[in-house]
Amino acid sequence: MKSNQVSIKTFGATGLLLLSAAAQAGTVTNPSVIVSDVYATGSLAAARNSPDATQYIECTSEANSVSSQVVAQCMARDSAGARLECSSTDPNIIAVVQSISSSSYLSITTDGRGKCLHVLVANSSRFLP
Image 1 (cartoon, rainbow, N blue to C red):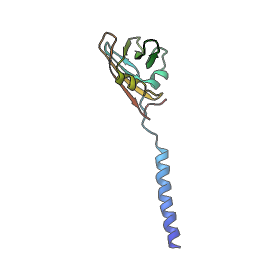
Image 2: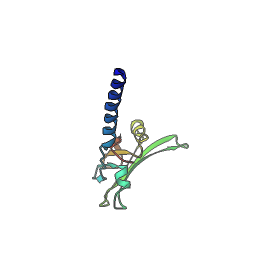
Image 3: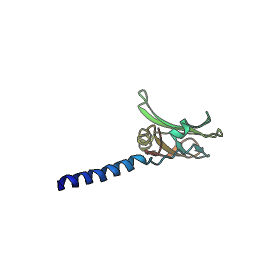
């Protein structure tokens, strides 16, 4: 009888822990798109769910079978209409761009003349899809 009581008490404590964890929501952040002369940041979800129809942030990769070249391209526009575009053939930037998901946060830095110098992709549960 004593072992059953221990099992019930253990299960009860575990159940309470599980219920309390399920009752709390996870951290959510949706940074909107910000664009300057040489950088852009923002989450795909924030741009997609923004109240305006202006902002977006994206990166794509494209392969050309004729030239055997792979190119990454990134573009962003904030709610005020400021735009940033860049491209790169750097294999490291291409690999990072190919890791983007629907819940990604992007940070893009350019040389100011259209070349992507740095692309950060953060995939996190904090950025809603």
